[in-house]
Amino acid sequence: MDDILINQSVAILCDGNNIERSIHSLSHSKNAMINFDTLIPKLLNGRGLNRLLYFREGKSISSKFAERLHENYYGSVIPCHKSADIPLSIKATQLASKVDTIIIMSGDSDFVDLVLHMKSEGVRVEIAAVRQTTASILIDEADHFHEITKEDWFVYKAPRKTISKRKKSTA
Image (cartoon, rainbow, N blue to C red; front, side, top):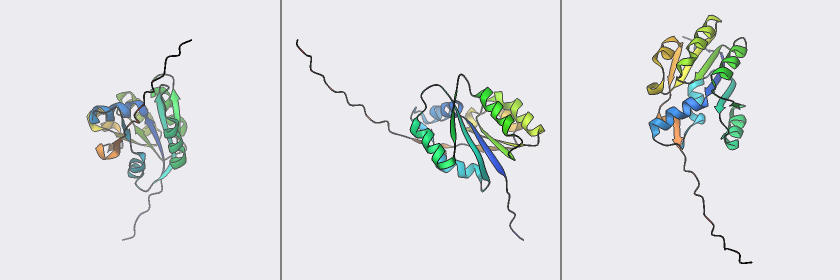
């Protein structure tokens, strides 16, 4: 029997704050980060990556992280005013006609309506998240669930800050 080649275009949309909170709670470390170098190939499973967008609320977005996502995956970090829910949903709707599959990296039940809408548009919707922090209704409604496990993240050691002693000037 011949091998079947599945040629799909995939967009990965990551709710950064949701995924970060999930892995921080399980790893018991605020320094845990997703290892995209191992996770992305696992999620794609031989399919083509159309887009990787990392939605992040807040101002503390590492420029090194943004550069690596762009260099390795032509990915973009999208800063959000508040939650990623609305910007991610809008982008998913815009991409629906351009991709075969959308992988939403989030366990947030707020995305259930988006999943149902995307599926009604003929888009395959997959969820990638930490099972313990993922709404069961989101897993049930998705076409496929990718469990993010401790093999998919690492804990980095923050550089130590050196405290310099300044001499008091006597004037």
